[in-house]
Image 1 (cartoon, rainbow, N blue to C red):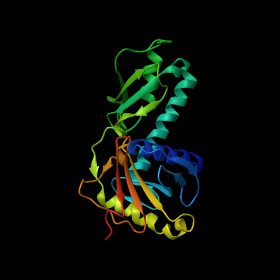
Image 2: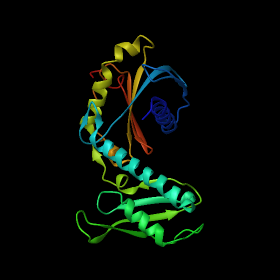
Image 3: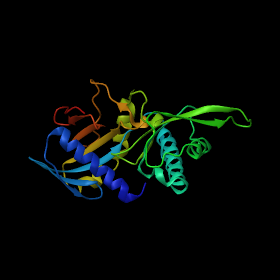
Image 4: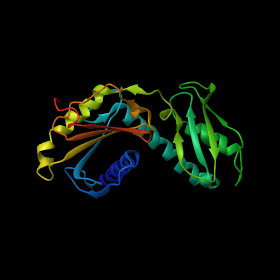
Length: 242
């Protein structure tokens, strides 16, 4: 992800936090911290980071990398389909894999034998491909096509998973960012952290338990945004021992 796209994503999360908190935030782009916020009663610095389920290393989330790889493969397939079958340009495609992969051959074979022009198939479509190292065909995916509101192609398997408890990972994200708190406080004394679980993807269906209270590590306030549904606010004033 480019720096510009990352900044746009972080701003989107800050705006959603403002909406869910029902606070009017004037958001100014900054670096270290990510934003300077003028709220209804105070001005503060806001750093934004994301939380994940499972293993997270310096290279990021293992699960998120897999999602990114599959999305990249699906978007490449979309591009190839548009070049060969231009009439799919208006289609929104939801791709449901039955084998954990994306079948270019299955998609091309189906499109080659079904010329719909500008019309849209009314039901789900079954895609078939050959088993590895064999000539046996099997059902590998179902796709659901619509038009009129989007032309996006989605890999559905990566959006419909279970929600996991991620208290420990939440605290780890705080600890990672806390290293920079002294730098942030040279800019502005009130420094807050927004930790985001973007629940639209399986890798970030990372919830926290109601009783969990994080260690603040120098942050004045910490927000946990389970995007786009809910947000929790933890203020160090409410938990002075931390």
